[in-house]
Length: 170
Length: 435
Image 1 (cartoon, rainbow over the protein chains, first blue to last red):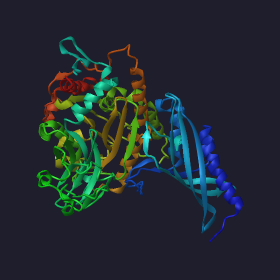
Image 2 (image 1 turned 90 degrees about the vertical axis):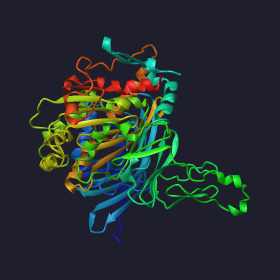
Image 3 (image 1 turned 30 degrees about the horizontal axis):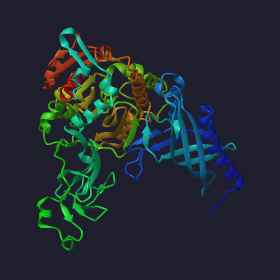
Image 4 (image 1 turned 120 degrees about the vertical axis):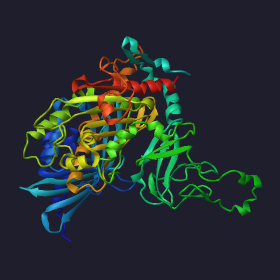
């Protein structure tokens, strides 16, 4: 098995932590910058108590963006001032943990990371709070010395959504 | 307690008003639950959720847990999900396939048609003969019926036949079902959400054309933005995106039993049915083909909504309390749809109908804003049921007549007219039941 250097593991984990910090600080451009142009972002729906949608082509997703442009749409919407659901934006706090980095056996410039996440959401209109939680699966590749996300799958364990959910809550 | 005074209905004066207590008084809510959810027909599921023998789903009817189960003969039963012995829920899962349901408490078991199969250690139990004078089967829900795969139940036997309850809404359900030669199925994947607002805000919103442009400008502008990015291959074109925009028309029907529908004529060239319109015309005729390509938002009172626009949504409303509502939302699609069309349908559905999409969050957040605003006791009457008053016809208009349906009210006009008399039949039914 190809092994990863501690430095690579450190860099990749830092990229994930950086992503979470960008979201909580509403640094949307920096957040988008961590994704490649052709990055897929997928939040599958549950089809049963313990079975997720397996195919975004045939089954329902909560969010499916086939390219980074889909995430840019969402950032545009949040910034447009035209969405009542995005005004005021909630304060959020992400925590990412249990990162396990797996090398790609064929490509030393690619890795997969499994991790666990929580996101505390503090909603400012009614001063209420809730927590979303689940796991992430990131695929990253190293481009010009920087790790970039090519695929992100978010699994949301508590999928009874209080009022709304957007990219910054997960 | 009588609540019909909360509807101020004076046609001669051109007045139709709904009192805010209908949305905020817990006593009103308690009576609504009894009246509409425990004494009337309630939507419980779609037959495609349980296609095989012994498939089941569990649902709530009013406040009662219920199993919708298909037996080995293929017949569907609605059964109270409560063991006859001590009351425990016998089936804790949301869906599955079980030949028999075993109560985890004392081990009584029931067949998929509800028959009692076993009372554990019955012979050793020294029961008196009188014990067997009553049935030990899972109790069937008082009434259960289906219309073209849409399943309904009533906890009370004192209801009209389902055909009568649905009335002309059957024709509108047909418009959804018949657009595919082999009918509709649920796409795998269920979406659950909730909001802190009264359930009737959801019923109103779905047939409210007036809110569309002012609540969803971020969605509509986003579509324009995408249209100006020809390199974008990731997002499908939607029906609201068009090169040639004819003047949009809308109309509405209100029905007895509280059902309602609003329709609009959106451009058809991005409609999923556009490519098949010739085959469709041969199969269902020109008039129905035209109707199938209009947007149609249908309320089947009290808890089912079928929204047919870019995709077909089946939304089920579960009122929890006067200011809390849970929604379960499903995507309906033609059986055997090709991969490209299915993908296009899913993306449009997710963008528009998901609480994690680009439009529905603006509705659910607004519902909560309304509920919060309405707590102000100083204001009594809504002013939201008055548009279209001068245009509405009591009875069918020419659109209804052409379809062969007999609504109690009809209106049509420009999209901007955005009629609100569509709510009247629902609140008239409401007032009669709540009197």
